[in-house]
Image (cartoon, rainbow, N blue to C red; front, side, top):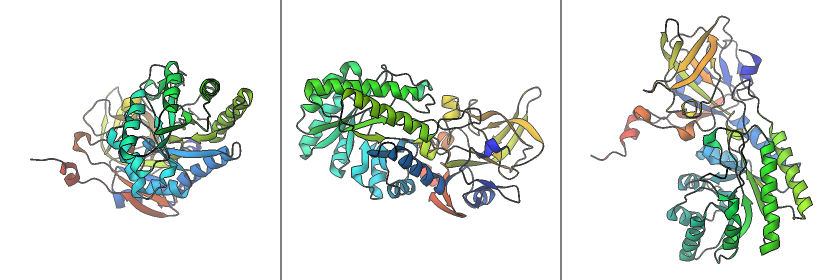
Length: 436
């Protein structure tokens, strides 16, 4: 295995004397035998290290910063507890994510509730459970939140989500800050939103939020968006006396999925965000607000590894050699949906000398179910274990039961110990909601 490939795995990944991939001190082949495949593995030390990096890189540049983990990348009870212990908040986008947070006693004052179509019942739960902030996305939500707050006799601090019209140069499906987007108030409507929010008897407007997209490599997009929103904040101060207490540029920092596409560092991201915020606040005579940063993928992405078992192998004369695995688009839809690219190793013979070019195909009934279209691997045989790095974000979170398949088990590894944090679905689970 090339040095570059192993760098895509969690930082303490090794290869043992048996030529097996070690994750968190655990033999990946032993994990596959014990828990079955497909199997998702999270390295606890890697998760905690990313949390610490975010706290350090932002804290040393702008002490009044809060790091809020974006649950949409992937959340369950075990991860929520880790983020609580690491002092992070949670960015939730549904009643389900909110319920996970509450189930583990996550401090609700550190929870920010996002989403472009929150239901009445979700807003009522948020008010009842005392979330720290609701990030209001549209005029309908402004009105609905007032109605619900009046009914339950509650008040709520809010941020407005704005759409600054900045192109982050990422995939169209994960660009969210453009003018023509389902998310947020376009800048042409933002003043009316501020006016209405400040007139509310039940909502207190404390800040502004934007999120321009996901898997972003070009950090200058953040400079542009921050300037637009801070200029607007200064205008609203002059017109309405609005005080910007909190400011959130969202998240969206890219991670490195393949060796030929290196992503910016957390330090680079922090420098751009904090320097632009500090400089523009000084130029506009704005009191520096509390900074709320919402990383998701860049915390969990590299910490997660997917294991698969090789089954059928098919060689097409004059075409590709297909290596079929026991997972695919049901547990990782990203290659089929976004054309996302991954790398992989054969976990039971990492440093095999002889290489062959193959395609790694999923088991599901779609021609587009190809996990990796072209990759050089040691000679692969049925029963081999394929390990795919950088699977911690948006794989499990977007997993389905297509072809009535079972969602995979999830294991947390640390210092040579493995702990099951989500069991594999059973056939009984899959049928449990059916009514005959």
